[in-house]
Picture 1 (cartoon, rainbow, N blue to C red):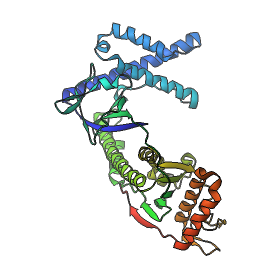
Picture 2: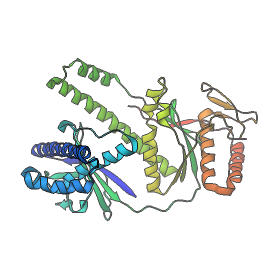
Picture 3: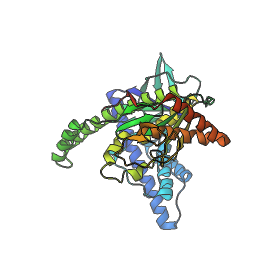
Picture 4: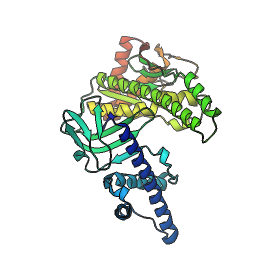
Length: 390
């Protein structure tokens, strides 16, 4: 499995300037490669392959000394990025666009990465031909014997970061002894089948609104507008980093506590069409949560599955009967005598379906035992254990 470690870096002022020059050259090469593909198609009706453009790169580096001074692996990553954009175009649509030099902020290296990260005097240093000396400062220990597969250098509004991708062995899957189902919502971000809940994410938009108004008042193309845009981008970066840290801690805790996780397979794009709930849904970042939880579960050897959420709020988790209710009704009451919070009931049903997907022929027996145990314990009440407020 591939795992990426995000690290901060230490660069001199001259190093930042040099990195900016490399970004500008990368954008220029990307646009030249895109123009070459367009011209070739207009003249011959055929496209150009990635390896054809690799051959062109050899001639470009021979003619232009500034490109010759930089490792060819850096510019191969640029052409590879263009090739991926073309493949996405043929698969999903959306023709590749021209890149402005101000908006190019990433260098991707996918070849011979293990030769570039070295230890010097107790420090990790990234040494690439033509690039400045980059001192890497990881926040956690890097895997000592794993193979470094990719390096990504990114300039963000607040700082420059390096992402190191390692190929790690996949751990053995743990036996299922402590499973959990997770229901995702708006009033509560997460509700677990054992009654634990996670408070919804709330973004404090006062500073964002003030900075956005400041940008709107500035004249387009002016230096003052550029400065205002930079301040707005930095504030969004702070909120993004805070949210990502919250999700990392939350998903790590869930993967550590349970050995089987069942979640909803939501169609978020369809749900965002509801103009009344679109902002609330997007703020909860369900997609990011599922992605990180899947990575943490795989790293911990925990089985995770996604199930169809249809009818989980209407079905009784105790007897299996269907109890119709509107979204405004927050308590599930069944004729069998079972009463519970609506989201807890849904989370238990998600867990039942998740276990059914791996149990095979023993589905009915397993779910029946769980329902008998649930009836003995009594109704589950929600308990808030964690919150993320931005």
